[in-house]
Structures are given as structure tokens and as C-alpha cells.
Length: 160
Ligand code: PNS
Image (spheres, rainbow, N blue to C red):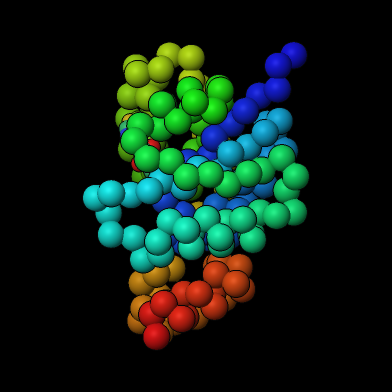
């Protein structure tokens, strides 16, 4: 059987323990996992893409079948270039579902051979998002236990 290549796309601004939980689960299921960082053109990210990639590489280096890459433009085009057959997205709560469903069906319309697989991160991370982590850090709160220590350091440096 052909090895299954999956993509875990996102903004990762910055990577959280919720993302890492999902990456670990997906890495167990698929032969190769490409964590793909979106080079956001409209959004104003806190971290430039190079820094988001560095943090992800550091956080995922224990997973042998995981690599970190950057993409811009359509996800379906990136998936075609990488010969990936699966997109993995995490659903934390029912509220995520509507947007994820819309995206998955639109991606399917553009590329019917690309399957979207939804996975559930550990329920302990169901409240966690990069946006909240950034807000807490900006307002001087602790993000310990929400992101890896090296990300915590970078967040502190960024908002100080
Ligand atoms: O971490 P995020 O911000 O929820 O990730 C969203 C992401 C990167 C998966 C989504 O915005 C995306 O795939 N963008 C690439 C552009 C694209 O393909 N748009 C059409 C989606 S139907």
C-alpha cells in the first residue's frame, strides 16, 4: 500500500499544546505528516512565519514522521504539490464544526481526491487557542502549561 501523506494546516501563531496533541495523534495514524504553516497575507500575525516554523520544528522534533513546511495560496494546491491525500483538522467543540465543515466541503469541491479527517484533541485542551494565549500573554498573564516553555519565552519577549 502507498504511504499516506497527511497535512495538518494552520496559522500556528504560535503553536500550543492543543496543536501538539493533535499532531501527535495524527502522526500515529498517518505515515507522513506535514505540518503546514500558512503564510497569512491578510492576517497580521504576532510571529513572522520563520519564527512560527522554528517553534514548530523545536516542538515536533521527537516525531520522526513529522515535518514542518510553509504554504501560501490554496491548501488544495499545496496538497497536490506534496502528493498528500489527507488534511487533518482538530475539532475542539461543536462551535468549531460549522467553519470546519464549510472549509472541508469547499476543499472537496476544489479537489475531490483530498479527504479531510477531523480528529479530537484531548478534552483538557478544548478551551485552548492561539488567540487566547496571545491575549493572556499581552495582558501579563501566565501561559505556562498552554504552550511549550520555548514558546512561552518567545511570547514573553514579543509582548514585553
Ligand atoms: O489555524 P487556522 O487559522 O484555523 O488555519 C486555517 C487554514 C490555514 C487551514 C485555512 O485558512 C486555509 O487552508 N487557508 C489556505 C487558503 C485556502 O485554501 N482557502 C480556502 C479554504 S476552503
